[in-house]
Length: 306
Ligand SMILES: *[C@@H]1O[C@H](CO)[C@@H](O)[C@H](O)[C@H]1NC(C)=O
Ligand SMILES: *[C@@H]1O[C@H](CO)[C@@H](O)[C@H](O)[C@H]1NC(C)=O
Image: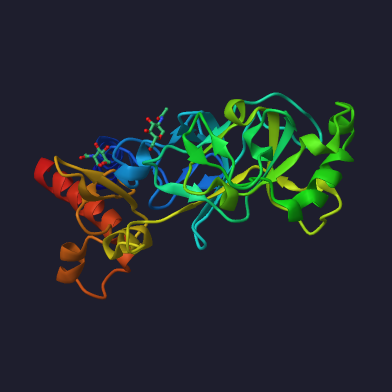
């Protein structure tokens, strides 16, 4: 009888434990999207990360995507330490494949800017009508501004290397139709509008990958910089939240900081459950405090039922 009762208690104990665990919703904000770790200011959904970034970078079916007015671009990786995000553009040309494209643009109010490492090579530009070939001081009727030469002459070897690619050489274009265009030349504009520039395609890369003369191995894509805020501070509340395995998010009418904890619980600080921990200091390592909470609740329920 005694043994039976004991196993019954254990059974009930585990039953309450599993019910309780399932009652606690799973963490809304994920700390990864596919293979890409997600940290502040990025987020995997509404209410996650920073609200300024949420509308531009989203996670759908484990795929992280950057959206701008020119299209949707897969995010290939994020370098959190240097605050750089790399994206690929399925419409761009590479050494392996050429295709027509409309270009690439960032929204003027997006919290991103082009990284200096990004080099755009405009391909198949009209040497007679493209504004990129106008000489210094010429006047552009469309934009009502004076234009400055936009092709980077020192980048000419890049055109030669790209033209050595089979896919590009097959187009049989004169090398004069190629223009190296860096974000410096883009000036304050956020746009590389190929229709306006009268080029049919472009290639973008952000690293020679240590082999400048081997365009097959260049890292194709676009590197973008981001800043946390005007002072570029990593909010300390968020740093504490992430240290406690939480994911930073926001909520409420004023989009105030929320720490989304592994159990699904939201706090305004971190997931160490300080108040509970403070009552039994040094008894438990911090990260087990959450489990301790569930265990105590389960134990309490068993106690009440018997
Ligand atoms: C916790 O915060 C996330 C992100 O803001 C939100 O989606 C979720 O509904 C919140 N959960 C609870 C239980 O309040
Ligand atoms: C171009 O600029 C001039 C002088 O600033 C202005 O008078 C003119 O209306 C502008 N034209 C267009 C098409 O915006």
